[in-house]
Length: 342
Image: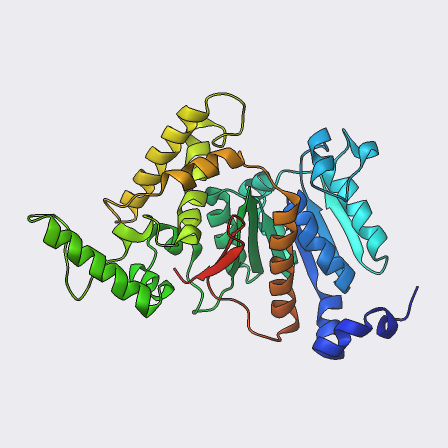
């Protein structure tokens, strides 16, 4: 085995021996080891994290071979957590690796104290309800938590820490800070929208639209102003509500696509209404795309999201650099990203 200073030479030049020592002392827990989770943990194992625990209750299926390079044909039918853990161990034998064949949702519900043993938890591909519960558990235990999810051509990463500058996850989901949305427009964009609304009111006397110094952005956000990231943010929550109501994600199964599109649109409008954004809508194209994704984890998107998540983990563990504050949204359609402080 190579000496640590030789093995980790390039990264030691970035965060130094003190940062590397912090990584080697860290204990990580990964929830769900699909492509997003595997890509995240792969980056950290190669970096020399101290120990990892992989939690996943599913078996390897044929479809997993197309988006997760840590499993192969011989893995089919076996525990996914076991196979991924073994492959990760091969990448760096200095890392202590173990797995638990259990669904993360079950652990969250039945054994919340389990998570207190870790330095940091990486939760991937969880739905909103499980995220909120895990967020509370980790805050009470003072355990750092990172959420990561890829969904078709979109995905997100979010950090949760027990410090005042990070909002509670349920607060963000239930009451986003609407004025914050304005800063995602350039001044030029904002003036242009105001001008268009003013013209709209002039052309349509008696229009219910308003025009004043506290001009809200939400009713126009999803009408084609380039806010695809914000649309994905709303839709990623909408698909979880959809799954809770219909026991599947939109477009997940063949047939019934038109019905799923209609249901997802209704669900999204209901969510926007709950957030106090009555009258707001999402573009038809974005809703159609979200259904077309069918909840698939594409390897290219998972690798990107996993890279961002691993980068944030290193910032938190080494206590170097500045971790992001907010929710990072990736838009794979336009190859753009946005950090939303909601």
